[in-house]
Length: 211
Image (cartoon, rainbow, N blue to C red; front, side):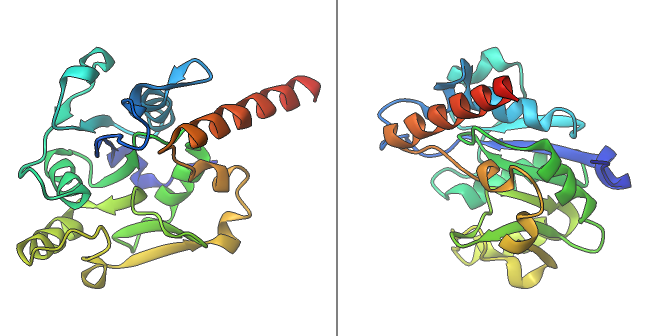
């Protein structure tokens, strides 16, 4: 799939957040198909982004990735502060934000989101599970002041600033036309979800072998 002309000004932001309490281990570094989750996300972003930044307050576990690491400008403010900090540090006019625990990120879906960006400040999937702000595209110039205003009001919700920007939702019907899109939105929070992701990958691999 071809990217939009704006694709040359896209930064990638990988958000490492939470304590992985339900997983019992640092989920970003757990392997699926022999590749750590965070590395799978990085590989999906690499063809589309001029830079990739890791948003993390504890840099130690991730220095081997060789990525610039951006801490939250204020601690304890949740993922909205992570997005704000990443957008402040990014050089691209657009930024793809992805959680670190998504094993099946699809570059074609990301490219489609970039293609839709002209005329919008946020491009975000909207499925039966709701909006997916940790798999979304954000325009720095419009989103930074809107997020700053939301944070100043004490907001922590990722979508709290959406009323102040132009949002393009990708409904489930539209995502259905993109192979792999539903799987691309999966994230891994528990040992059961990790096992499910590994099972899906094995099934995909064997299906390809049989094709």
